[in-house]
Length: 296
Image (cartoon, rainbow, N blue to C red; front, side, top):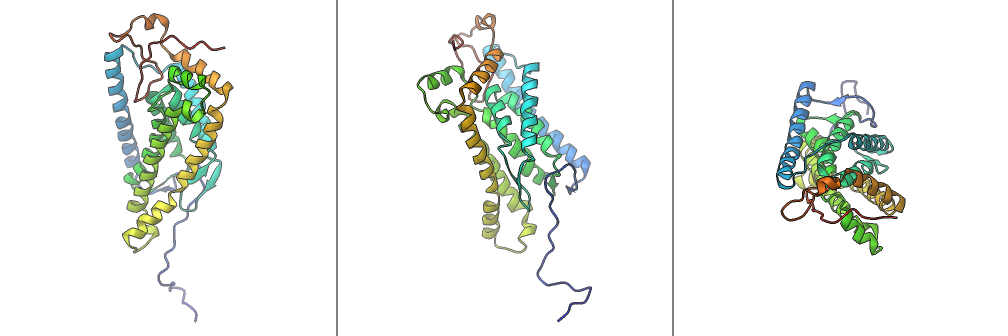
């Protein structure tokens, strides 16, 4: 039996083509002005908590938020490394990539420099990811597939590096997972937010892949397919264990953080409780009242 030219096989939908990450916006299905408007709104939402936290902390400790040239340089280096690594990996046919620990440099920056500076770097990283041939079917799919997952990277700085706590942990020769537990708590928060966001996107906006199907199947398919981000996260965690266990890397970052800490002149202006805040701040910020660590 032969089909005529105007006939097609029943029950078979032709899927649109997906491409490996590259420069271009061929997959964007919304108007450019609407995409820009959504991004401006997102940036405003990101900036609001940073401003609020900065004002409250300035009133409480007298510490003013600043983004120095050194912060900018380290942020640019980490952004470049993460962006290059995001091109190295396995691209899935329906979107998503398992990379070579591409999120590691950015999350390390968030951990050592704090949540507020990390949020700025993550916002830039999110914009860079939108240059890798994004596939966007609506403003809401862009929010769930790009904005929330990449901004969630800043959660790695929610429990930012604390020199005193780290010194106590390394002094007892504990494993990097313990001495840098703040980083891993933040990374756990990040992957939970990213995974849920991808699952919701798969259920709400990518039902065109399933056709008419029970809700349980749609949810299960999205749950299974988006597990690729768990693999991507696991690779970054394994790489971080090797990196944060390195004494040379530890000394390097201690030097960087100590340069960002308040000077002794500023330290003399302590609060009523006798504490001085570190500049590498997190959401769960811990005040420190001891002198800088003395290291060989």
